Structure formats: structure tokens, C-alpha cells
Image 1 (cartoon, rainbow, N blue to C red):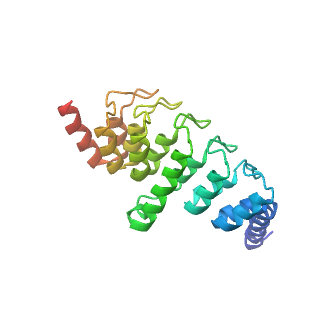
Image 2: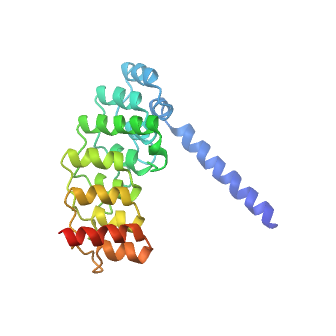
Image 3: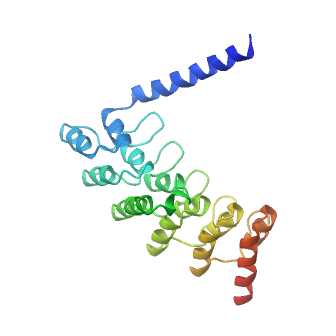
Length: 228
């Protein structure tokens, strides 16, 4: 079979699967994806289950939080949505709001404000900062991976454990070092990150930063070690 024909068939299959997934979504979940707060309120008044899940275990609140649809997030929480429901990956709405954050986009004032408002709404709604995914990641770990300094500050202010460990025995500062997120590292350092901590392979944040070629973070950690 010609290569172009194979690629075309694969493309058609992907489109079909995406369409099937969209068609299987409930009206409430579709409204959450659009950020249509008015429609969400109407559907709930008509008896829609505010905590229903799609085929991947994602609730309407998770979908609304993923795109920082703050009005939709608030409408769902006000209607009794469980902010700590997890999907098939063990991720909550708070985690998804953070996981998709882009440091470059968060430099845009309006985007940062909307993201901050979404995270705060989820926290005010009772988001549990101790919930972990199947890989042992809590919400703070996701901020370190994504370089999401907006959410990181909010979580730490609400009592998130700065030296929490995942299944690899890595801390948020180790992941910030690994990813090269200097701004996130600076926040973690001011909040008491343990620079002597080692993962299950015996590596510290400094070692991970050096291996990945993140010179700025290596210099930051050298200076921080001297001060400690």
C-alpha cells in the first residue's frame, strides 16, 4: 500500500476517533469545554449530574479548568461539583489547570489573571493539595514541571509541602531544576527547598540542572548552598 494512502487512512482514523469522543460527551461536558456558564446552570437546573464523567474519567469541572474557563468553573463549584474527583490518570481539576499552563503565555496579563482566578476558585472550593496521581505527583509537583509560578505561589501560600516526594523520590525543586525553570526554582528556594535531598538515583537538584545544561539554575543553587 502506498505510503501516502497509509498516512491518509491513519489521519481519517484519528479524526473519526476524535469525533466519536466529542459525540459521546454529555451536554454538560460540552458546555464546560466551551466555558458556557449560562448553559451549565440551565443543564444542572434540568437535572444534569454535576459530577458525571466522560470516557476518560474527566468531569465537567476538569474540562472547564483545563482551559481556565473561570465562570464555568465557578458555576460548577457553586452547583456542588467535587473539586477532588480524579480522572483515569488520577489527576484533578487543579492539576489539569496547572499542567497545561505555559510560562510564556502566563506572561500575558489577562491569561495570568484568568489562570490565577481559576486556581484560587478551585482552592476555595476545597481542592486537596495532598492528592497524588498514579506517579505520586501532587499539584505543587505539576507547577514545578510546568514552570507555573502563578499557581506555585498560590499553592505554597495555602500550605503545599515544598519538599514533597514522588515515586522517584524527587522533590518539586528537582523537577524545576530538571526542566530549567529558573523562576520557579527561585520561589522554591525562598520557601525552604531542601537542596541536599536526593532522588532514588542519588541525584540532587544541582546534579540534575548540571546534567541538563541549565547553567543559570546551577549558579543559583551554588549561591544558595553557600548561603545555607
